[in-house]
Length: 299
Image 1 (cartoon, rainbow, N blue to C red):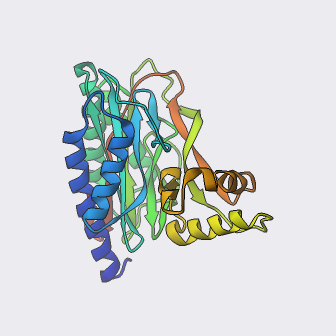
Image 2 (image 1 turned 45 degrees about the vertical axis):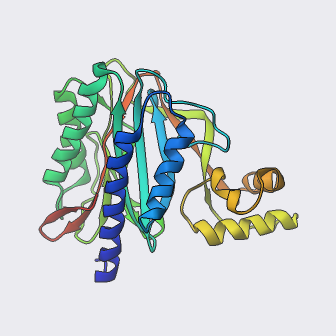
Image 3 (image 1 turned 90 degrees about the horizontal axis):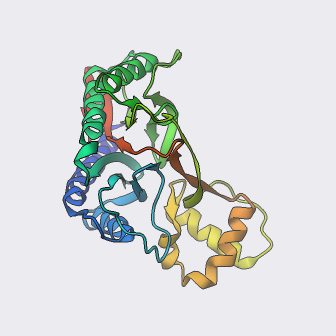
């Protein structure tokens, strides 16, 4: 069970994440640069006393997750888009993870409502001893009851210190598992919803703009060693964006070293997740702490 100090940090991270989520929901408009949304979120997290636990994800239409702007990104929020904004905050390594969907096409509002209803249902029933299979079944039931389809291969997840995904997964569909929710754990619950005629699963897209330190290796280039030390010290085991390496130095100086670290598997890249049939996706997400009596919503 998290100690009092850890729980304090979780609550603080949750307050910041919640505040930033509501601000950016109102600040996201058609036509604005995606990088502007990402950087506004990350800057605001720091201003409020937290640190980004991962790069702000701005995933548009059929992109379900893991899109953040690369350096110099010129993409804009298109007209009539459905935009998932996923925000992570940590305070001393204790993470709050939350997401909202902003919609510029009234046709997709029902899908967002289904994601939010499924999230509410999950929070209502999650408690110590509940099986993750029952949780997934209930989430699926709500989504399908609203006339939509859950994404079968995207899940909620347990959070650990400096670890965004650790321990248990929380599927959004019916499945067989002996896994149970435990008191003292912290989970991100995140239903992903798509249209009934969609494939209902995601596949890896061709891009990747989010990275994570994996392990040290023997490296031949001194610049690669220096960059790896910087990444490990600065981000630990948390995901980061290449944009964040601006603190290390100009991009053209570290580009070769960065490629070397990826090739040597010192770093891993997170591919952008795209709905397999190209259909739109909505998402809703909260982080909860599991008390003996049930969930405490942190975000």
